[in-house]
Amino acid sequence: MAGQAGEQGSAAAKPAAPEDKSFPADPRTRIPFAIALSALAGCADSIGFLEFSQLFMSFMSGNTTRFGVAVANADWENVTRVASTIAVFCFGAFLGTLLAAWVGRWRLAVLLTVQAALLAIGLLMPWGTFAYPLHAYPIVLALGLQNATLQDEGGRSLALTYVTGAVVRFGTGCANLLMGTVAPSFWIQAPLWAGLSTGAVLGGLLQIRYGETAFLFPAALAAVLALIAIALTLAKPGSPLVAGSAPAPDASPKAQVIDPIH
Image: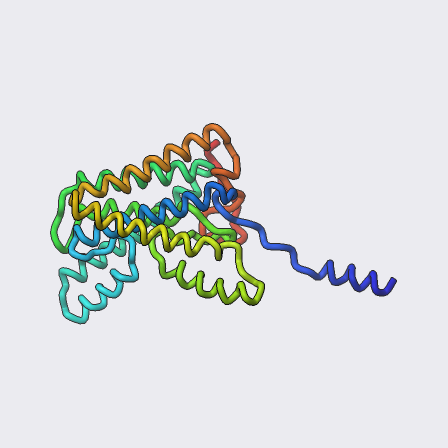
């Protein structure tokens, strides 16, 4: 009896498994969409890097280094150019998170549709000046917004437009795998890196051949993904294929799920 009571006490003291906050909840859509969007980001970043004199469209770590070098050299045109790009990217993440909370179960479809539109609109924008590359801003805004589209089991935004986080999580995940404590999101890190790298190669080839019109490829890819998301949402409303039980990405653990649009 005492042994049984001890076992029951141990079971009662064992913490419950954390809630899965993935979005979409079903990995059959989340993982393919994540890899496709990483490839899209790598493609757009590579095109933009070549088209806009080594200005990154999605890799803000690289832009931050360029910002520091520009400040050190008192190159104020470059300071303004890089700082404005970082600000637009940040605003994209801000806007995407608000949209994700506002549109509820239509989140995947809406964010992908907006992203496709912004990638295409970039080709219609005036070039602006070197310090203010207006032509690049819609592309940067789209890629910032993309980071609010998907989230892992912990409710964190999946890093779809940069690979530093993926490489770090893969390295730490390998160590945790040896210790038997690996997180489920570990397995997607290598495919995300591969997707972004493959997209970057493709983007470079497209830009060399087609110039700025190469941006139509990532725009078309985003549009195809948006159509798939719209079709799934209409055919299977509320399905884990296109929905989840978590609030907007990176929200407080106490945040409530918002689904005002039915």
